[in-house]
Image 1 (spheres, rainbow, N blue to C red):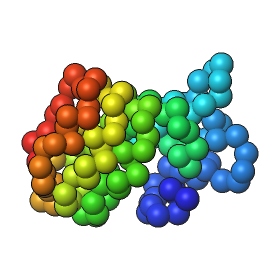
Image 2 (spheres, one colour):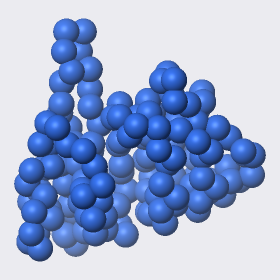
Image 3 (cartoon, rainbow, N blue to C red):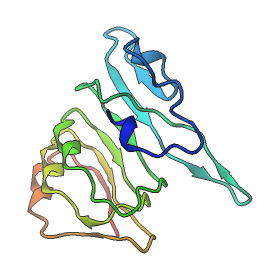
Image 4 (cartoon, rainbow, N blue to C red):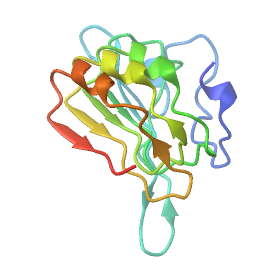
Length: 149
């Protein structure tokens, strides 16, 4: 379901098909013991000469045990950060930096009580807005906040 709402011109998510084991999909890291999806790496990393599409991970969000999600440096075209990210309570690392999200940062991110690192930095013209900072009080484990929105 997550994939159907994305444009994927580089076909990074080509392996995400069927009802099979999502741990075999490109970019999905699963726990060897439990088989739960632990990490999703969807970040694009730039070099000086060209856009290097590497390190991408995701599943159909078939993992309440997900601890790491990197969506940095993507182009989400100015949509708001999805509030459902606040339901991924096992996240310890969430990087949404410079992914061209816009609008108000959803207060549901305050539900991520296990979060140690949150990246919301943006240099794009879309920009995110902070309605209030009360949701930050729910981030009891937060050690690294990179937020210049």
